Length: 338
Image 1 (cartoon, rainbow, N blue to C red):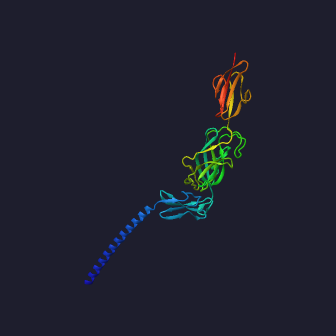
Image 2: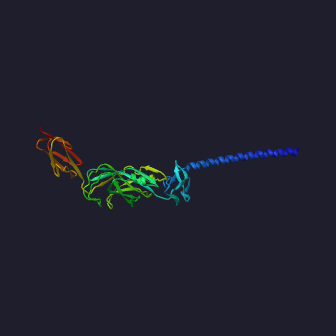
Image 3: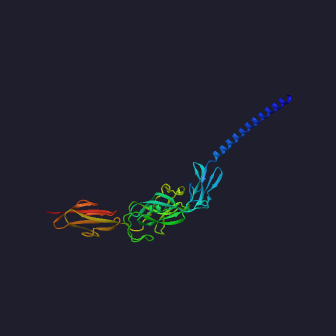
């Protein structure tokens, strides 16, 4: 019996020791876990060298003191690291053209729209409207960022030190009339109105500016800054982005003479002739004049008719004096005399 009591006491002591040990271990685990959570919270900042889910650019993410590199999981699958809400995320992406060197094979493209506004008579101001990036099939983007008329302006894509990365033709929706688009263009140019011009070029991760120049080898007139954070191109998506920082207006001075067209029309039941420098309407009812030119029009009624007056850019019945600061239209009214 004595031995049985000794065994029971020993068992109780062993259980008590085990419980104490488990409690101590649990408390230690909790303290260590709290330290780890505090450390994780302190190191939750995340940076991504390719600025997001950029499947066509190799990048690396730094988070929690560790670095995670984009890599090719298989010959056709990309393991992409990116940041979201301050923490590292990852995904597996199927690359349409295969995966190589930690990025999907292929190119991204940028379509850039610029607004052209007349500033005085001898300069044009460019400002950015919108930009779009796309990957894989760029035909829709090419179609969107094309226009009917070649422009005498070029866009140069520049790096951070403003070294050229490529030069691309600008296309305009406005009506150009010029003798040539040489370097610089020669001859008169008509109808410089507010319009949108477009350019399409391959995305370059080093790009920091869009530079505007006249002619293929013209001097750079100014630059519009890009926001490289927006240069993100994902598989199967088109991302409308604004690539410009605040401001970024570029004024390009025009080295040729601007001209505007004066058109004369005749209305009414009568007949007559309107004349002025270069106009004999009659049959020759329009003429181009240099910007700022003054044109005097006179009306002479035919026999059996009377001149009733001007409308459009002129009024009254006297000499019509027009200053050519833009395209102008004048109508003359002749009526029959009973």
